[in-house]
Image 1 (cartoon, rainbow, N blue to C red):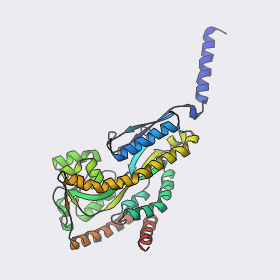
Image 2: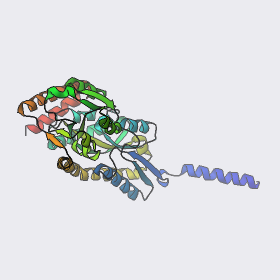
Image 3: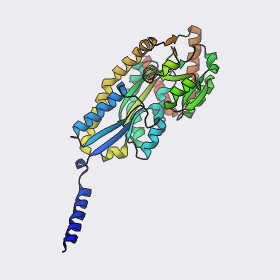
Image 4: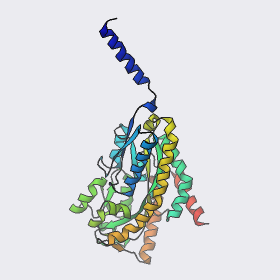
Length: 335
């Protein structure tokens, strides 16, 4: 056997051995994205999960995080996940509708009215949402709070009849929300989340829906400094990973990885809720003003909320899921 043939044989053997190596011997880099800017609690939670995964795997599994919307909005994140450029990250229930509409029941206007009700609903529905998303190719690592959605405007708004005066930001991946805004008399302007700030500056929009903590973290409130004191709905999110990528992670890590993610998710839930409450006095120091509807106006908002929730049930959320959540809320309130 010539020397060249020996070298070829050795190289081929090494290549075959390399292909036959168990998955646990190969390093992996998980690519996650989040709209949350660096330094926020959401980003820190994602970073903590990545650090723990690296420690558990002895450095074989690493996590790279793209924060602050640098890869685009949630629609862009999901598109990149589907072609393998991203492997997961933090996605709100609004973004998850691209996989399954079930979790968006949490956003049904004024259906859920308190964190206690939300916890009661998620105790029952969380595993069901996990199963539905798994069927669509997503593994839910942990659910998390994003806060309570309020309306922020450039001028004070408390009267439902004044909605016609507002050009409101509408998420470009949620066409039913556009119809919802139109039903209320708003003028929705569809755009990506990363375009909201310059659009507020230019006057393309003069209002937006957001959690209080989100409005503070993204600094949108500075350009629409009036917040209506009517909680619209809780906004949920999930830290997810593509099932295809999850299946490539050695099975021995699955249980400790999942436990680490859920423990971190549980630990930050109360912190997010505390920060969402505290965001208002912080923003007030920088010019935010809270607009509080009177009793008659609030009653009209509640009526509109009930109509909107029914629209949500008819057009967005599977009826069986909406009815189940509605019954869970009624059960909680009857205690």
